Amino acid sequence: MLKRIIGGILSAASIAGAFLAPGYLATLKYPQLGHAPAPLMANVKARDLTLVCPGSAFATGGHSGTSVSSFARTGTATVNYSSNLPGGVALKAIPLEGPGASFSRPANTSNGVATIATLSSVAVTVEDPGGVAQQSSGLFTAQSFQASAGAGINGVLATNCQNPEPESWLVGGVTTVGREALLVLANPTQTDATVSLKLWGEQGIIDGAGLNGISVSANRTVVLPLAGFAPDQKALAVQVVSSGAPLATWIQERTTRGTVSAGADLVSPSIPAATNLVIPGLLKRGTKDAQTLIAANPDYQDLTPSIQVFNPGASDASVTIQVIGSDAKSLGTVLQETVGAGSVGTFDLSGLADGDYSVFVGADQPVMAAAKLSRTNAKATPSNDFAWLPAVAPMSIPVTLTSPKSGVTKISVANGGNATATVQIVSHQPSGVQTLTLQPLASRVLAVPAGSVISVSAVQPVAATMVSDFNGQLTALGFVDYRNSGGKLSVTVR
Image: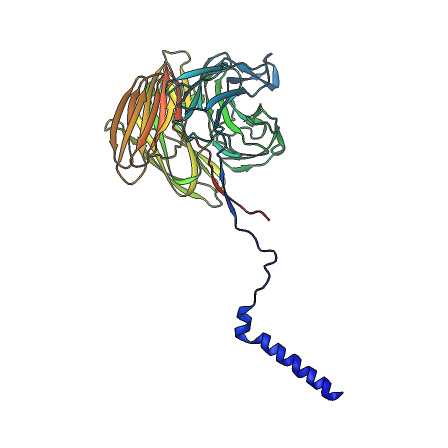
């Protein structure tokens, strides 16, 4: 019996040795349980390009003019647009304030300028079911203009129509006495959005009730008075974060001195924070008239050009502001300033004579900025208006917008880079081409025809702003490109 047990153990050992032999192990085929298949590459079509325009201005007080929490549309906004659509692609517009809103239907313009007259906010979509169109401002661009001459609002409000985003930052706006800042939120989708706000002023972040859980229904526009969250602020920065749907956002700002309406404009979202920013288009006029008004009444002090710089970081920012003339006659200035962590600094650009300037902002950490420019003419009614000049993202590819069909319009192009830039400005219908060379930290101002499609491109990236004057009333728009991203998506099926 013992011999049988010992024999069995030796037999088992010999079999195990055979399995453990290195050569034998290499020949084994193990089952591949749970092995993931190779991923599939799927082409993802870019979301159709949609641009949202704000509609006509909001007047506080509602239709009666006495309701503190109500806002009524006043006047009519004109949306200039241009499109160059391939076959199978069309434009579709919807109002964002219910069935009663009115607007004219858009059509392909083939690089001409067409208009939509609208009271409500409106969303215009480039419907591209096959994904054949290359998205850009050359495919479709739209700008909103309104010259308001009402008792409550007197000035030109203008803006680029926006590609909606889930997050936006706005730098500009004042809520001191006689200054009103309204936050406009437009939802162009079929889905309700929930919004959270953060606000910063000169003393840092502003806490308060009602900043979270703000509802913006599908295909609707909501207006919020910023003074309700941040009263008596000389400078504001606002972060808008939405869930459920992307939004288009603006700050509508107006100035009233006593019973006199003294200008209005729309503040558009800022470009991302950066250590170098370029603000073209500080075309200063009416200095003598402005100085007379300032000397007589301190409430006119804001006729002096100024710049707001927002520091979103956790430590103080050292900022250099260079205001450089576009020619030898326009002598600029330089400011060295510190902007506290999480705060907005406001700095007057005083001592500038009438002339053409651009602003170059450098900082030791990323900041956002916008300049405020007033236009004063004692012989005009109203006698002054203002516009917010945005920091503009440098570009080299052609970027397109439309010029208004009246007024005097000029393009300010500034080179904030380290290399010489050759710039081409093309106008379509009427057609024309202007070419210029810009050294680093240099700018030029060129007149362009009214009611035209304007494209700017450059060998080295440059920033450009369109400034329009309507008999003393003022507006300024930065050149902005539009596109949604498509591409390839890796899909694994288990």
